[in-house]
Amino acid sequence: MRPYDIILKKRNNFKLSREEIKYMVMGFVNGEIPDYQMAAFLMAVYFRHMNEEERYYLTEIMAKSGDTIDLSPIPGIKVDKHSTGGVGDKTTLVLAPMVASCGLPVAKMSGRGLGHTGGTIDKFESIPGFKTALSKEKFMNNVRKYGIAVVGQTANLAPADKKIYALRDVTATIDEISLIASSIMSKKLAAGADGIVLDVKVGSGAFMKDIASATDLARAMVNIGRRHGKETVALLTDMDKPLGLTIGNALEVEEAINTLKGKGPSDLENLCVELGAQMLKIGKISPDLDSARKSLRNSISTGKALEKFRELVEIQNGNPKVIDDTSLLSISSNTYEVLATRSGYVYSMDAEKIGISSMMLGAGRVHKDDKIDLSVGIRLLKKTGDPVESGEPLCILHYSHEEKLKESVNMAISAYTIKDVKPKSVKLVHGVVQ
Image (cartoon, rainbow, N blue to C red):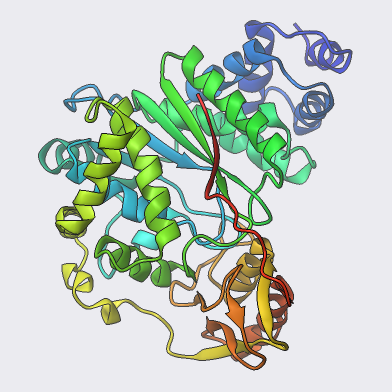
């Protein structure tokens, strides 16, 4: 077997066998196949794509390329949630304590984010003292005893995906359905959950800009999950405007706490209820989605979800006083108001530009080794559909460094389109793929 022959076969649009895919993937991981041949292989896949069977093989091979987590010692059905990423997406911070307080064990492994803002781990580390690096034993014990734990991904979880993704990033082969789906699902399979709920974002602030491509990705991931014996469902959710009213790590933690108190933005709470309902149904905690939704709303109204969040913070060495006093979060006091240049309605928002504006302040990463400023970000005062007067603030930028402010302000201004007419409302959940 030679890399040349496998590249040629895929270039000519023939189906690859499991053995051929494994030869390419593991050969590259082990250093036996050079970058230039793997890059050629990825480009062949980019143009010729993979069918369901090839995606299944690729995902399985990457999932088994390193450590896998065995969650079987934890009683009950374990259900994981994954978002394809968006602007202001802090759902795990709200969702994990909600579903855990309803009796579903949450053994969550999350990553650090590239792009607009940090990942879930960065957000949790905005809480003073919060520790995301737990031993496997501590992680498992916390889930068994308290029903919840959130940790960073181990370095050796799906290492094939990490190495291949790094090559895709520099060879213009990121945005191909088979490669995206297998990348995401390889990590989910390696993490050991029994079921998977996928939040596939669609819109200006998402990787998938239109419903058709988002649906294709959702179907690909659901098929991979089900072929591997995991009950999998995907929700297509709106990302034409940011989720909630904050972008930035400590700011998003503050908003998550307020949401658990029943005082958060409705879109964030509603999305967490919809995702959580699917999780509770797959986990056999609730017989149907309606009863699951009621349980989740009840977890907020009774304070059960907030207390579970407090418990999570305590058992992972964080300061639980932040729940009662969010001023203990390190949010920059340096602020700048971005003002509307005309009156009317916010007709649309370019969520990606708002995300980039936040990243320019230091809230996100351009490169994986970049240090994030957890204290900076954007507080939105106006979103799509809101009326606005000329000179009224659209958003507030929290910044640490004056030199980063000007470009961020210009980007934020360009994200808003104001017109005389009010836009039509858009659904939060565009559809479900299962």
